[in-house]
Amino acid sequence: MLLNANVIAADTAKTPSPAQAAQQQKMTDCNKQAATKSLKGDERKSFMSQCLKAQPAPDAKALTPQQQKMKSCNAEAATKALTGDERKTFMSTCLKKAA
Image (cartoon, rainbow, N blue to C red; front, top):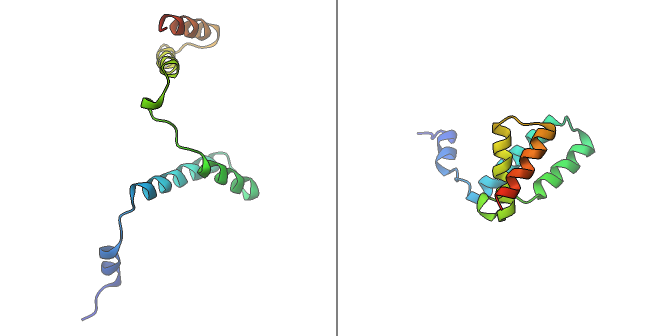
């Protein structure tokens, strides 16, 4: 009786560790960014190298109080669809009152 090689490979396939999964996701994200920018050759290699070396974005818990205020005010300004001087005025007021 012969065993199907695909079944054996599937049975022995290892689930990636969280670190491996994160690196795979980072590679996918960097590839998408490079494709969006239509990068090719050495320019793409350079971009991919820098992108993969970049530290992941800090999570919300790591934000300073000022960064939290800025994030909150930005979200509110976006909800109100403010632009230009109107947005600048709103952001200034929002950041001052949040202090």
